[in-house]
Amino acid sequence: MTTAHAYAATEKDGQLTAFEYELGEPDAHDVDIVVEHCGICHSDLSMLENAWGMTTYPFVPGHEVVGTVAAVGERVRDLAVGDRVGLGWHSGYCMTCDQCMGGDHNMCGTAGMTIVARHGGFADRVRAQDASVMKLPEGLDPAAAGPLLCAGITVFNPLVQFDVPPTAHVGVIGIGGLGHLAVQFARAWGCHVTAITSRDSKRREALELGAHDTIVSRNPEEIDAAAGRFDLLLSTVNVKLDWNAFMTTLKPRGRLHVLGALLEPLDLHSIPMLFGQHSVSGSPVGSPATIRKMLEFAARHGINPMTEHFPLSQVNEALDHLRAGKPRFRIVLDV
Figure 1 (cartoon, rainbow, N blue to C red):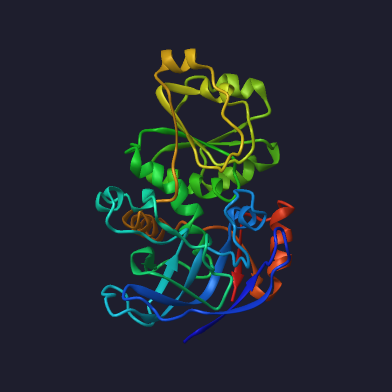
Figure 2 (cartoon, rainbow, N blue to C red; figure 1 turned 135 degrees about the vertical axis):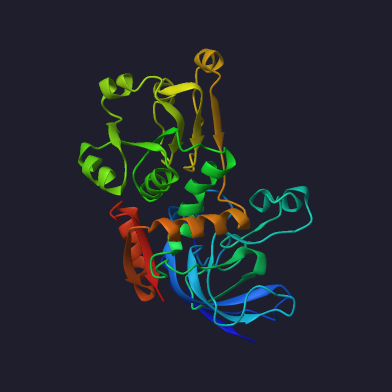
């Protein structure tokens, strides 16, 4: 058997300490990964706090894994020992439900989640089903690529799912961990991109990321001036905003798409939605095929997360850095 050396919390909101566990005998479709880098996502923090009510302890976070294949099950065909790979939110799928059979694996009702009821990537080894493990294309920096496997696919997936044309005007609400990637992807997709931020200080940063223009959401005059502008609004924030004000900025048949994990309901007036034929939607990560497309697209267009790095041994300091809202824009642990 193989021993994994990890960092785990034994209670809600607890400090992460050294933790060992046995991986057990691999299944035919299992892939063992030697972890080189693992991003820290806000979802790791939410799970550590049991904010979603589904955390089990001891809890090993980490679902933005980059590493090399150490071992494969007997039925694994497209991965080999030594391949550099990535693993994101999902660690496996049932492969038999209508969603999986239709290519929408990310909608599988029994999909395995890398940090739910299993141990994640804040470790030197992690195991997952081969369908959820992606080869990294040449051209991606493995030290920075981890956040693409969660934040990246989260913002890329709607561009594919809704067949967003390159003529679209896209607004990105929130220029943080997800938003800074959404701006880059939408710009490379060919869209006109407006970065919508609550702080005037982020205007220059958003423009440097590729936004064509900016709006400060706390300025009602700027919101009013954007009436009827957007085909698609991508909301990457996890806080309550004046959603009705944002709905006025949509074109007829425009869409507000929610990507941030909001815990409060959306309060929306129905009459403007009816007359504008507006849509409100949300989506989780993406299917394996879409993740592959996203990685290839990122490599082709030079899209990389902006990252700050901590050694795995300083994981608690890294989590405190995230809690304080200081990262620009994602944290990666180097194992």
